[in-house]
Length: 105
Image (cartoon, rainbow, N blue to C red; front, side):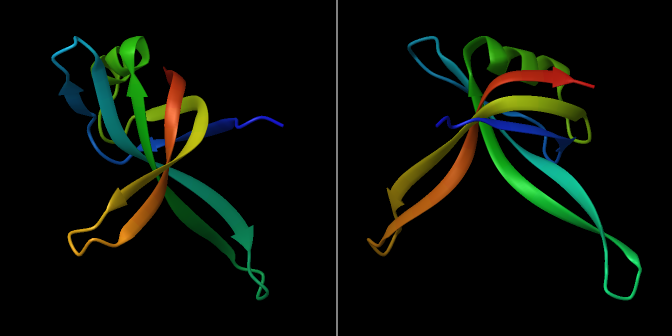
């Protein structure tokens, strides 16, 4: 079994770039994907799903240069669950997509 994600959607935010002292670069952004379906009444509806994504290195450089809010992009990556402590000390978790490849369309 493999942890593999492929999505095509529109960037919902401009890439947020973080440069680390080590020279590493990380970029974060959101991606909106749309799915159409027919309701029981026969009406065509559209549902938008929002995804949190991040990338490192050369992929981060590409996204930072080529992408901006509204840009259509195809990504390949994997699901990553990250844990943290809230301000109240409660353990929380969220799932994001670590992008390994991106192409603007």
